[in-house]
Length: 97
Ligand SMILES: [Zn+2]
Image (cartoon, rainbow, N blue to C red; front, top):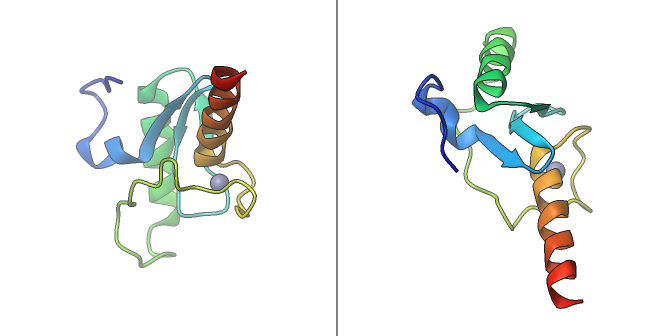
């Protein structure tokens, strides 16, 4: 997965690529996406961070939760990690059948 250089480095661990497109992960109830390109996801994330600045004091960044994320426990409305986890489960199911 290659992310174009127009995407600021602090966004790179918050963008994920799924078969549906690119998602920008947020700390809020709704992730952003899917988008056609990482640049669009990054742009949406920049706008999102500006809108939420000051509302949320937790530090920037987010630990990688890939493959640990549980869609059954997740309370987000539009979750990029859930999309990724579902696709991953599906690809495992296809692989064993
Ligand atoms: Zn989720």
